[in-house]
Structure formats: structure tokens, C-alpha cells
Image (tube, rainbow, N blue to C red; front, side, top):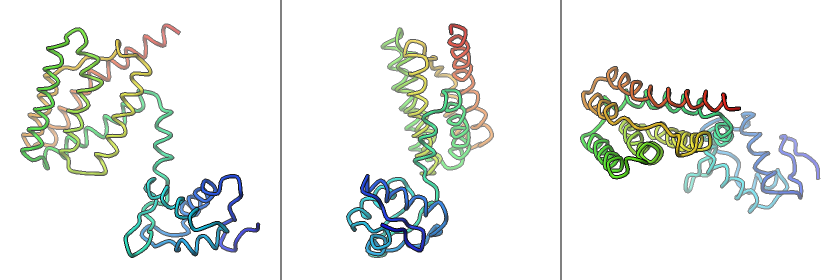
Length: 243
């Protein structure tokens, strides 16, 4: 089969859907269709690519899931982004625990600032409830509190702070990095080496957010993150020394 005049080459037999996805992704990245513009219909794309409409439909579904396209009922499919967010996130998976932790900290500090001016009483109640559950776990399992509360329960509190910023994009990005931090830290240190949670700094952050002062909230957030970050640095140094 031969290529088309617009640069969309006919997909081969090896993997029609994967090849179609790759070609559409390349065209989006090259700016063939600007953000906000409707892409050609399934029928038109099938003609250009030399594949069936079902293949095109499946490729579009994948790119919608990846965040590059968006389908509007009765209107068609439109360009949401010319870059593939999934590719960026896959790169994060290969980053070290320090790198991922630093990005998560930057997101959380900005979220704390926004939460200070956007929070609702329900947001504050959610943060305090998360802390109460965290404290209960630490009291019930003092010998395991550090790893359990940090890896599992502490993330619930931090997510509540971020979601109090009421920025869905920030919350979704943070959720991804939160999961990445948890996986990276477990892989690097194991559960027994996880840094412990200090509830006092968490409570100070809630108070700062509730005060409505964004500078105070950011400062409290960075103070909270300073201890676990230092613990990670020490653990990384210890691991390096053993090699």
C-alpha cells in the first residue's frame, strides 16, 4: 500500500490499531489539527489510512483515554492536546524516588497556597478526619505506625489538602505522583525503612490552610515535607554506602 498525500501512511498488517494510533499521534504532535479543532470523521480517516472504520474507532478511543482527543456527542472528535500525556507519565516511572518526591512536593506546596484561599469547611473537616484516622492507626500499631501511616494513611491526608485547592487538573496530577512516590519509596527502601509521620506538622498545615493565609500555608507545607525529604536523603545515602 502507498502513502497518502497528506502524510498519513497506510497502516501495515503487523498491528493495525497500534500503527493507526502511532500515525494519528504523530500527526497531532506535528500540528496537523490544532487544539480545539475537529479531526476528520472516522470514515475520512479510514479512507486516508487505508484501514477499517473499526480500527480508526479503536485508535481514537485510545487517544481519547490518553487525553489527546475528546469526543463530543453529536459534534465529533476534537483535539484536546498535541502532546501525549501518557508518554510524559511513562517517563516519570523511570525517575528516581528523589526526583518524584521533589515534584510531588512542588505540587503540594502550590496546592496548599490555593487551598488557603479556596477551601470549604467540608475540606477542613476532611483533613482533620484523615488525621484522626492516621493517629488511630499509629496508636493501635506503634511498632508499625511509621510505614503504615506514611505509605497508606498519610496519602489520604495529603490528597485532602490538594483537593481543597479545587483545581481538578492539579488534583489528578498529584494523585499520579502520589502513587508514584509510594511505589518508588517501597521499591527503594522496603516497608521497614519508611520514614515516620509527625502529626504535629500535619496539624499545623491544617491550621495554616484554615487561616486563609497562602504564605503561611505554603510555609507549613514545606516544613511538613522537610522531615520526610531529609529521611529519604539519609536512606538514599545509606543505600549508596552499602553498594
